[in-house]
Amino acid sequence: MIDYSQVDHPLLLQYIFYPRKDFTPCPQNAFDLSVRVGEGIFILCRFYMGHSKGPWILFFHGNGEVVSDYDEISPLYHQKNLNLIVADYRGYGASGGVPTLTDLAQDSHAIFKEIRAELSRRNLRTDLWVMGRSLGSISALELAYHHQEALKGLILESGFPSVVRIMVHLGMPAHGMNLEKIDQACLERIQKIFLPTLIIHGEQDSLVPLQNARDLYCHIGAEEKELLVIPSATHNDIMFVGLKEYFNALQRFIQKTDRLRTSQEN
Image (cartoon, rainbow, N blue to C red; front, top):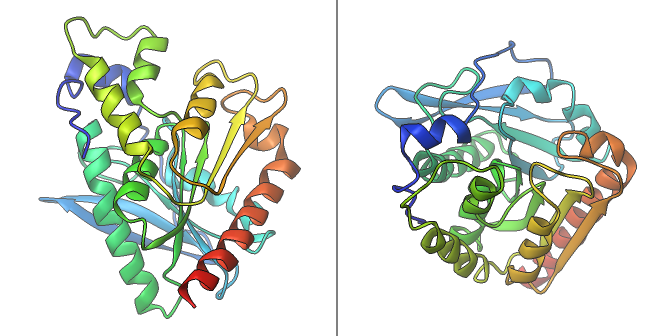
């Protein structure tokens, strides 16, 4: 795992994480799972099921977001025959604890394990695509690197190859820290991710500039990879500016990689 200990400093973490404690009860056609990630600390995951035999996306949301934000968004996935699981982070929504980059990465493994176990208990598909939006790309890349045999594909929306690049871009105080070492470790690991990959990014994203998506596309080790740039979209309106392109690309990618992995297994 990437060593984030240098940047897991309270002075920096206050600029990196923007936790919200908003929470709404579970809607119909959904169910919640609390995953234990530490002593007395649980992470909330919400399963939005539109089709019992449909594929599942494990989604790590963006900064300042919470699970229940997706109560109204999940039907858009269902329209494409896609099921969605959204995971919170420590300190976000109904989840306990305080977020750090180290815990963000480590917790993704416990979340992945328990989500697959829950799907199995309910006799649902256990093969997953992992998706990360913005901050969530850290968790998605962590799982994509360590669980390549168990995943069908990787999807990154408004993502970045290294949190260091966002820290530098936003001018966060990091004097005296060896950020280059973290950045290089992230790039080296991305080169060893061979999962089919879909990268979606807004052309006018000023928070996570488009060059981050280009760098991800360039460095990812996958042979099967695609970069979709949504014209005129910024960081937070990408889904709605490119609504048709966005969901058509998701559906095509999952259908294609589902067939690809199935044929390889046979």
